[in-house]
Image (cartoon, one colour):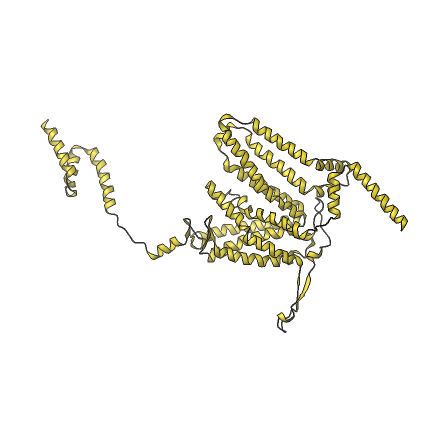
Length: 460
């Protein structure tokens, strides 16, 4: 009993002793309580490391390094791995540009097929963002519903855009012509019925514990169709108005993206926007100037090729020849007194379309990048770096198409507002006849027109 009281007293003395007495404590615990010694030793080491920590003033070089960061991420000019990243990105870009050039050379139909493939990949990447494996296991076949809505939207959109080209392709076959004309006439009803079928399908698949997940997927699918598929579908309309109206806007986005990267890579030091930490004012301004100049020059180069300027009125793949129209006929401007007498060129030839190309270049350099900023904010909301990994160094297909979608809509609206003829044309009247008249009514109209022409010939 006395021994126990003695041990308790010794423990109390040790606990209240100053740090200089820790050696005595250590010896005591070694003799009597080895496990306790190990536990307290670790705590004493931690306290020793804490008391031994020394404050250090930040050096000027460190302050500068942190100052060149945006939202915790280094700018390209300070990124140590930037050359390796640039090499991978350049390699992928060369392959993409080469493949793109080959498809453009093959013609309108192949470009349309390329756009459809891109849309499918984009939809797949975006559908996968909200997939939860636990819920999907309880909903077999629910993923098919998203694709049902996707292909219904595709049928409706392309049916509206390409009805005239489709009819012109099958005019030689009487039976096929009647079938296609009927499908086009009732296309809106068919697409609506398909949508309602998907809507009923969705209601029938609702399960008690997954209501919230299913309605979230339903809203997510419609947002994809509206903001992604709807906008990118305008690209197809531009293609059949003439490859020029697809290729020039798409090329301007690529040029703006490349030069924004290069100017930011070598000169970028001022962050542009918090949503995209590596975007800089130097890259934005340098790319804008380069894109506008490129638009003016590229319009002149592309405007000399009928393969690019002629609209496609059917779905064939043959070579095109047409009257380029006044937009693609050079107008000569005298330089006069603007240049010295020794200057070799006294006048310049400028196509009217080049002035319109400046508007496209201005939009591509100033407004279209906000499509990329929107995508950056979208990825931050979902806490992901890229939408996918389909393209090394670039991310997914959606990462490359964000600005292209915004540009495609503007190019279509601009063409319809300022380039396309505003009065009725033969193509517009034929399109209305095909859409709204049955085959018998079209045949009757043909006979009536034939009779009118015959009477005029007799009178003359």
